Length: 604
Image (cartoon, rainbow, N blue to C red; front, side, top):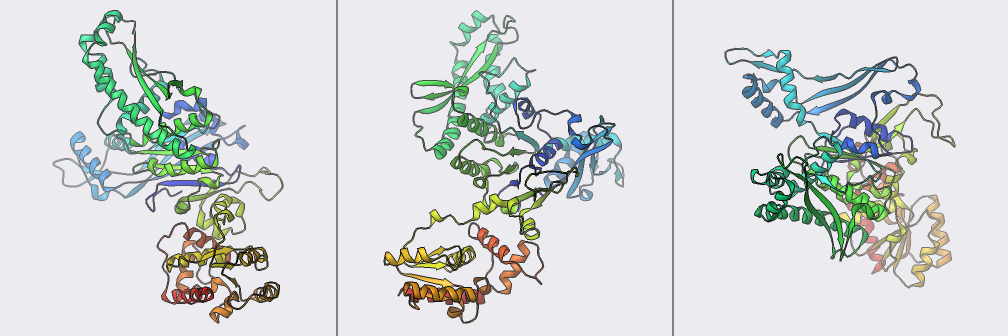
């Protein structure tokens, strides 16, 4: 998979059938550079449990597996990375690094070795060499092993952390300790999330300086009873109060603004309340008392624990808390978020709003990969970043899905290429077709309407209507040349102006005769494309070589055979949602201008 962004978005979707391998690909990506912070959540998730190395062995070879399981990643190495590495070599190793010899990208291979189904090692290979020289040396040389390791050690933190968040709802702690629980991994995860909230505000606030150190100040290292009286009457408490109040406001703004968009609820009296407190450390205060925070939802005069709210709210609360704020974490190489079937327990509108939140999450240097079956989570503008997942070891054509003992062979294929190579395997990318397909409820019958045979006519004409700034006519698609009776009856009954455009083929001529006799239509109300243009019989015939070549390029097919009708349809379906700089020749514009002039004549 190529995770380089080709536009403004850095979101990538994995689409495929059940058992196609979407989760396997996400787990493989996660294994390359797992975020240790989020790993603590997995034990509570039915989706991705914390796995041992032995669990990675292919199921068909678990009895006696000897070999390796590896994940290979190609890492981009930009000028800023090179400059930072050169500076590190100079200051820490007293070496001059030859930045000119550094590649623009290199491979990292993470490997797990097995002998007779027992894990025997996990070597990681960085396929990159460095040339350096000391101050008095004239020529560059290859680094020694200790020098190479030091340089790699500087690069490692710059790799994106990969966070795999469970889809299932997990428990939210009643208290998050900001001090005194350093060995509690789960608590540390939520503690870092709270720091993300502070970072989100852009005021350089941090837990240590602005909360914990104020409680642990020398003057307050007192036994619990004395500490309580001294501290809670001091100005330091008011300073911490303001930090916590700002965090409450930031969380409320993010959570409830999105919640309102989805569920259309009035949240004027709702807010997230973050409160802080202290607990006796049990050490006479010599090392400072424990500091913690709690989260509540204030709804009017009532307060609720997060755990007391609905399943949908809890899922969405955790999702936004873990992503919207984590995306602003300071330092490191950014975060690659992985989601397997996100929002599967939410309704369609919630899924659409979730999709709208993705661009904010994956702003540079962050990225996002998600799998889905739902067409509500397909964004037509991002289809350049969509992959169809296919397990070639499974026979899907049978009534039941079976692997028949074949090896697992999972492929992630760019959407456009898959459609081009497998035009009949529509079930694999059905969510995309569902998203792009015609929705009858969107089309209101009105005066000055053109009835066309089907989807191809609709999408192609709609695109050129917009391209040529034709706004006063409505296009209404049927499901074939012979299916327009009801639409004609309605428009005729309502005394609307309309024009029926049929293909100039044998079927179109036949249906023209039928509609003329049945509804007594005039030449100003009915015609074939051949009669209107004098040459072309189908709407695709109006496209010139320049347009067809661009469609071939989009689907990586030969221009000698040209695109199929299905590929042209798919291309214009996408084009009506997002125009990626499609260029239209003057000759083609002239053809459609002639066609549209005929429509206008019919309505004069």
